[in-house]
Image (cartoon, rainbow, N blue to C red; front, side, top):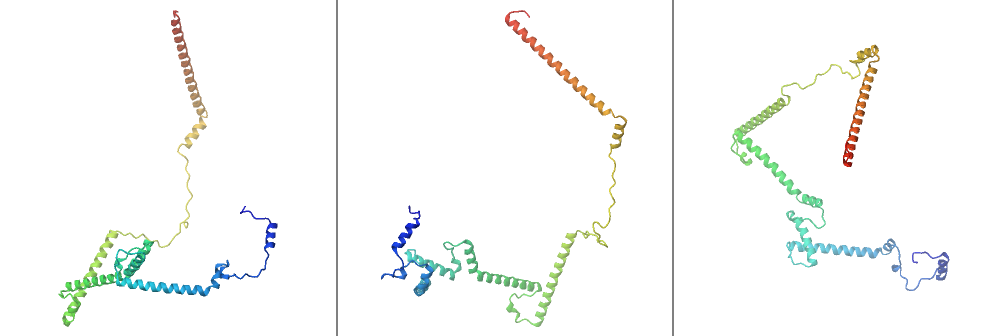
Length: 288
């Protein structure tokens, strides 16, 4: 059987018949020998490195060609061959880098990675929008203060031709508006405090000296007798046979009840037997 091992004597005979330490034949080639992969890589290191450089050079050239084709024709036609489809994918990737709004999820890409890629692509746009919104809010506040101060100008460039008196007036108006806002904030804070406390002192009273729970010794508890303990004890001492008499009365009533039930049972049995005898005699034609 192929999975069985031959006897040692058979293996020894085969080894002696084949011999050993023979000279290599004329067709011997180390590249065709069954050597480990690591040793083969060491022996063929030059060929492997040359092949790797060639593949890398070809891939770089192909990537540059695809990039040039994508820039020249950003929207390829729908009728493409197998090679044309790969060029279309490369063009789509290039378009995504140039225009983030045309980004699409790639084949085999996780949704988390796609979201991260979208956030990275739109990071500059989002930060610019946030800065613009903040600047717009600041300008709105400035315009509101100018209007409250009575200044009709709304642009920053209009301040160039103002006189010293106008600037001083604008400064005073701004200070008044700021003081008014501060006063309103203080009033609102006071209202909140009054609502929170409701006019009551919610602080706990403080002790002059801190005391632990077990600093003051507590008095031992006072034990009191039960409500009926003395009465029941005196009654039992004066009349020791009271409980025994009650038990005897209960036993007598129980026996009388059992006797009455037995008598009633016997009466019912006798009545039933007499009735059955009368029915049998009538059936046989005999007088009762």
